[in-house]
Each structure stands twice: as C-alpha cells, then as structure tokens.
Image 1 (cartoon, rainbow, N blue to C red):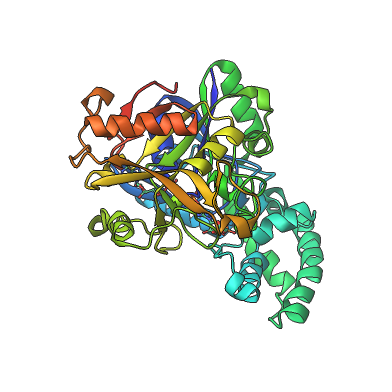
Image 2: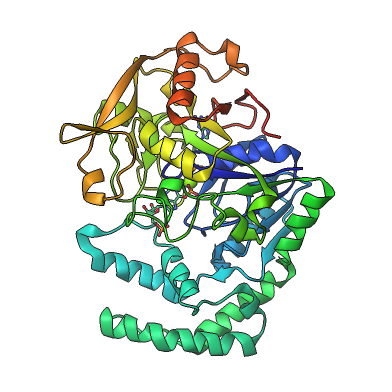
Length: 434
Ligand code: GDP
Ligand code: IMO
Ligand code: MG
C-alpha cells in the first residue's frame, strides 16, 4: 500500500491539517517528518476544533499510530503541553510515538531566534520565534541535543555544556544578552525527558512495518514548499525542508525515496503568507480584507494559527504553484478554501510575471528580482453562490468548475480533492487519493 506525503504547496497554512485529517481515515500511521512547533494545523471535526503544532493530525482518530519523526525539531514543553491539552479534551494520546533521533529545541534556541531577528532589523524574516531556525542550525553544526539525550544525565550534561560554552559566548559577546545556566537547563530537560520517555520509540520501524504489512501511511508535511530552505524564496524561508524531495519527507522518518508512492500538494484557492519576504500577487485592497476576514467571527479568518499574526493575502500565483508542483513531484493537488471565493465577483490568477517589460514564466531566484516582478493576471468570472454544501464536482457552479480546470492546466497537476469548508465532511473527492 502506498506511502503518501501531504505537503503545503505555497507559503504555509494551506489547510494541510484539514487534508491530512480527511485522508487519515484510511491510514494506519500518520507521521510528521519535518519542522517544529512553528507549524499550526487546524482540524475541525465533530469533537470540536483542534490546533496542533507538533502532534500529527491523525491523533483525532482512535485507531491511528501517530509518529513524530527524526526530522522534526521538538520543544518538549510545547509537546507535553499539547499532549496534556489533547488528553483534557478526551483524546487518547497513547498511540503517539516520538523518535529518539528528533532534535530538541532548547532555551538558547528561542533566545537566539529572538536576538537574531532583532539584529536583522528591517530585514527581519518574521519568524514564528519558536527557536526552530537556531535548532536546525545546531543540528547541522553537529551541536544539537536529541530526544535520546534527554533520557540520561550522563548523555545530556556534556552536550548541554558544550553547546552553551559556544552559545553563551554568542549571546553575551555578540548580542549583549544574559548567559544561560547549564545545570538549570539540564535539570529542567531531564524532567521533560522523564515525562516523554513513555512516548519514545523506533519511528522508522513503525513506518516501514506498516508499509510492508500493506497498511496506508501518511506523511504530514508542515509549512509550505515556498518556505523550503532549498527551493523557497530564500532567504525569507524556514530552516528546514518542507517539500517532499527525498531530502525532506523520507529523510524525516527514516525511509528511502522509493518507499514513497504519491505526493499530494495542498494549495489554497488564493495565496497567503505570514512573515516577511517577496509575495508577487499580494493585495492591499478591500478584496484582501474580505478574504482575510471570511469566517473571522468564528475565529476562522486568515490569522496565524501559531502566532495570531494577520496573514498577507494575494491571488493564486500559478507561476509559483507550478514551480512547487515540479520540485515536489506532485501527483495530485488538494485545493482548499474554495468557499472563501464564493462571494468574489471576479477572480484573478497570476499566469506570468512582467519583469521590466519582459514576460517571465518561472520563479526568479534573486530576491531583488522577485520583489520587482509584476503579476500578469487572467480574470475569471466568480460564481457568487455558496459552495459549502456541495459534495460532487458536477454540482459545483459552472464558473467554479472552470476555475478549477484552469488551475489544473496552469499548474500542470490534477486537482483530486476540493475543500469547501473547514469540517471533515466539507470535501469533494474528484479522484480518491488512497
Ligand atoms: P495548515 O497549517 O496548512 O494546516 O493550515 P492552518 O490550519 O494554519 O490554516 C488553514 C485554515 O483554513 C484553518 O483555519 C482551517 O480550519 C481552514 N480551512 C481548511 N480548509 C478549508 C476550507 O476548505 N474552507 C474554509 N473556509 N476553511 C478551511
Ligand atoms: P504551517 O505548518 C506559515 C514562516 C514564518 C516566517 C518563516 C520562518 O502551519 O503551514 P520560522 O519560525 O520557521 O523560522 O519562520 O516561515 N512559517 C510559517 N508560515 N505556516 C507555517 O506552518 C509556518 N512555519 C513557519 O512566518 O515567515
Ligand atoms: Mg498553519
């Protein structure tokens, strides 16, 4: 049975949690493979609304094994808080497994995230401030602390001392900040280790055993491909690999590229971005306000799940989307928030960029160029009818069908799932993914 990866196709918050929740019905294992609690995945079902930051979306089903892979950066305090929160809502968390190889977000990572951003001034990236970037820097610098280290003082103490010997110099000498105390860090993190110990297990074995037994496995991406360290709008990106390239999904749970059969990209019917960085189709007018505040009265407007920041809004950028389809090797697209366009009289799709009079059909690598390009739009008539109750493609208004068909053409990938609302059942399955 296939291993299916679900990735964000744009700049994050496309509705990955919602789509994983939908697809997880048939899966045995759901695994997070990258990023940390910079992610915020919203799931709405008959038990209520859940905002997950580290725990995989499958946890809301009673029978799925949910794993946090080695590729994830884990803040133990956040994870334990999330587990407590789920338990207090009656969710069984005993099926959660945490890789002993996952990197740990330590107090100096959060402090460095804050200090790095302050030092960047008006060039700040607009990070979520959760310490995820500095944690991945330590991983690459081979200075990181892993979940396995939290389980024994003799493993943790020397690694914390070594890391702080370096970071305290940076914090004090470079930034003029306060040094952190190694003993206090160790004591606190050994306590976290004790509480996390029952969840620690062999993630690779769980994923591969399920796969070989013929069970479906879902790999839940975080962030969006345009925030990808390699392929995204660098340097305004995150510090990990949200895309499905073998360096992302497979690596993050310990499997090879040949084990992955399908990659589903989640795209909004328009675009959003939080944090700074180029966004060619960004809107600053009444349409942006209308799209941002759709559902705001129910707490469902375009405001960050993790930080509460208003999301920047723009029309669907087919140039960036096609690029994302290509480098992710997408086999299908799940198009979300179609219903948010229900009242829009004219819908625009960016089909190319204008760069000083020249037409550009690929995403420029240079930040200064990407900041300068002007979107070339195609206009389509809106449908101006409610789609939230529609469950079959043929029952969608003619204009909505035409919009989706045009998106497929432009981004070179079939739209197999259409989401017309945040709840589990508000979906149109054009072609089953499983
Ligand atoms: P993620 O980070 O990709 O999981 O996305 P977020 O949860 O941060 O943001 C997506 C938001 O859109 C959440 O509030 C979802 O409940 C909501 N959502 C997902 N799909 C739909 C949809 O088709 N229609 C509407 N109206 N809301 C949706
Ligand atoms: P989900 O999984 C949207 C953005 C931040 C910032 C940049 C770097 O919910 O889609 P970081 O804290 O990662 O160093 O910040 O990446 N970012 C996200 N934007 N959704 C996310 O996750 C994001 N995770 C990080 O806003 O621009
Ligand atoms: Mg989100």
